Image (cartoon, rainbow, N blue to C red; front, top):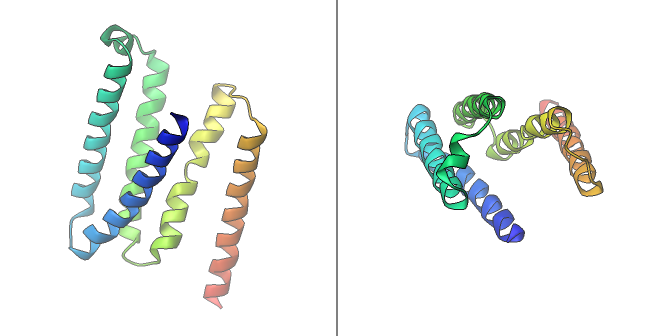
Length: 145
């Protein structure tokens, strides 16, 4: 089941980038796209959570978890909105890679706040993230020359 979720996540993320570019070419307003994106995501997440657990469990979520979720959600909303504005002026590949690399912040918070264990696979993933950032920086420097 884990690989199915991974496949769905990767497919959704890829389609999200494609749909952003299509919406940009059609002249859609970034704010409207962002609102629709987060509204649909919230509804799907709420539906999935209510199917997997009882309603009483959902209402007993600690305030700290809700606060962190709300803060990360606002940051994600601002990041996507900025991505939608920036994609008009640059390459989608660079913009999309940067938005995906922004997942490093919640990952780091998860390690430091929740004391999540760093397995060898996760350590490799974090190392590859840093390598991707370095490659982006090198590519950008070469473009500027």
